[in-house]
Image 1: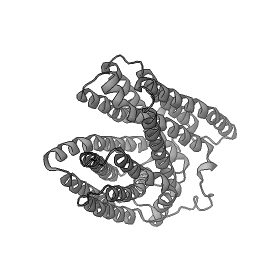
Image 2: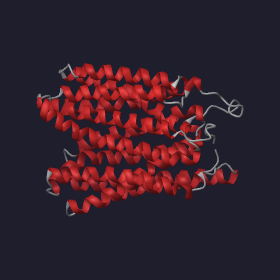
Image 3: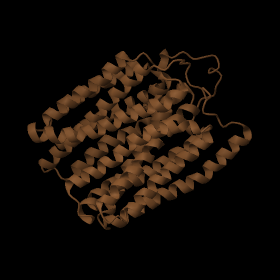
Image 4: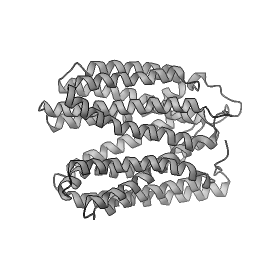
Length: 411
């Protein structure tokens, strides 16, 4: 499938986009953590905190069909500047409201902006670089995102403890201006400003269900994330109560998965050249997803936190590799002018599955002990991978027989 005609990779654009996404992710986690602490301190209760996380997640899943089309049809610069300014304004309003209903509503508005900027940035990256450089560009983006996700909660805890809720939200508003700056500085643009080449004009419209391989991979990713997201809810009780670990040890466990993801993105950015066609790439993605689930299932037998940390590092390593492989697979198979919709669909699958995992994990904790729940979520995720592997193998065989499986080097 075709990439854009970029001959020389624009690494300055990759750095700008990664930096903006890293800062905005840090701001997202900063705001979410600060608001959760504020709601808890005000006595709002678990329902309000749950509503906060749902409001931060649900719009991304629900708006994917709309935001994906906007990302493909409207000038990316216009979208980034407009969304960044809107998010900064909403965050300023958040700094001066206190009622749970108003907070949850404004968080939902923030998530609407995120639902738009995520596919815009994701679809821009393959247009910034030569196809051979996309794994490295993806690793740079994942590293910035993971750094933001680590820095945000830590900074929120410090700022809330020292200055209260308002300063973290004002800092968050400033981070959204990074999106505006990126929109103005990026030389790579998509949407109506992107010329359509002669070989693209006769191509039929791309549809998710029209590509069985991509559709099956999104199902696998969603199924695995639903299980892993459930573990995110369960693990605080598993680590703190079942294993009797300290808050510091719990923080170390959380950081271990993230650190593994950063390492995995760079390791697989180098290894990806070994997969010479879409079929082998898809099979490797399934293997990595299954590996993440097995790690979670094995962790259920952990006698101590010291046993969990290396498992979480390994799981994060495979998770980071899966992120690089999925980005390359989508960019390779989806025509350039439809990539916004493709990446919006991926975001919707991830966020929707995470939401299901959070809800189910919380409900199950009411009636079951943490240890068996950790095992069950890992096993269910692995079963999803096995179930999806059957149709994926059929699609790969069919495409190979028809000569449709695309070599990795084809641009």
